[in-house]
Amino acid sequence: MKAINPTSGELIRTYEAHSEKGAEKIINSVDKAWQSWRSVPFRNRSALMLNMASLLRSERDRLALLITLEMGKVLRESKAEIEKCAWVCEYYAENAESFLQNEPISTEFKQSYISFQPLGTILAVMPWNFPFWQVFRFAAPTLMAGNTVVLKHASNVPGCALAIEELFREAGFPDNAFRSLLIDGKKVESLIAHPAIKAVTLTGSTPAGRSVASAAGRWLKKSVLELGGSDPYLILEDANLDEAARICAASRLLNAGQSCIAAKRFIVIESIFDEFSRRFTTRMKEAVYGDPCHEETTLGPMARRELRDELHDQVIASVKQGAVILTGGMIPDQTGAFYPPTILSKVKPGMPAYQEELFGPVAALISARNEKQAVEIANDTSFGLGAAVFTRDVERGRWLAEEKLQAGSCFVNDMVKSDPRLPFGGINESGFGRELSVFGIREFVNIKTVAIR
Ligand code: NAP
Image (cartoon, rainbow, N blue to C red; front, top):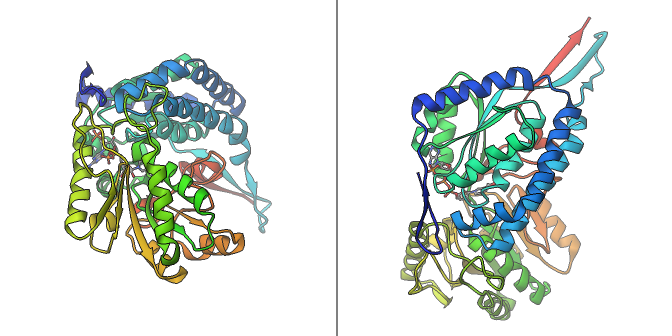
């Protein structure tokens, strides 16, 4: 397995992948670790999770550099990612026990209640775009619930996968409570089939989600899927246009546009379309792109050259169907997987920019006659991860967010964000199940009924 620096195109290191036998041995040892981890009291699990939070903070700079070297994220954002991992560890260290308290139910029995019991070893298939955060937001609640974890990380971040495994050991977790497998995505089905794997979670693209969901179905294992999105942001005629333009550009460019909940389609009411697109273009052009390790850089390279080339193909295909480039849209003549901030205007149904996920720094501007049509366009998608509305009328925004927009998270006057305290996940082709909050920790437990006569 090769880790390649997307900024320079240079090979960082080659890693030996696990053989099928090697993977099986690891899964068995993680399952064995579960036999004792399941009965470790909450206060001890919490203490280890707090150790992990401190370790992440003290090792922040080293880990952030590893992220940046393997997938190109701007170093400042990599540091913030590590801080956020520490936060989710603390959050579940403090709340897991109350989230999983027995719940009494009043019935004719002498006693009846719900008990939340761990399931066993959970397989996590994770993407490279937030190589630490995606893992920790699943692993912190899952371990706190008394499960153990086998991670199959994306093939382009093997260094991150092994560093996370090592961190769990250093924080004092039992040796096999968390293990990483270096294995290709095509071999995931055989892992799901393993009798010790009780459930699987995948964060990644919709095609990978289909494949994991069908394998999970075949082997009758519970699955949670966090998939792609084409998040619509509605800019209404009464919006604060300066604020909206600033937030929309920040959301589109974060992590070089490679975030599942990045704003992707900007649906703007006709009467303010030109004004918004002028301000938005100014904001997008402000991005300073270059070496992600440099202090002043705000936009690094994409994670892999072929992903950059696929994004460019979507831009070109959209332009052939009538979209107009307001800025960017050209592969720069430089080493590395760079792509400039790009805006496509006159985006219409049928174009890749309208119906596919653009996983990079490319924004699609779509004009709508009025609020009703804006909502129709927003919901005219196979996805349903996040959505946002910009309006000065907070009640109008709230109503649209709650009642009208079809997505797992709807924000008003801000970009969609993940937060340990708020449930996170999608509907339709953006997946099913939830991470974070009380809902995340209850995904991989046996919700057991106990009734005593
Ligand atoms: P990806 O190609 O689907 O890969 C994600 C993970 O799935 C990797 O570990 C990959 O392994 C594995 N994989 C790929 N094909 C598979 C298959 N057929 N069966 C089983 N596993 C398979 O996605 P990505 O390019 O890494 O990440 C970008 C996608 O993730 C975007 O669509 C983005 O929106 C989505 N995402 C969603 C969320 C969310 O919370 N909803 C968060 C972040 C990202 P290999 O690397 O070995 O191929």
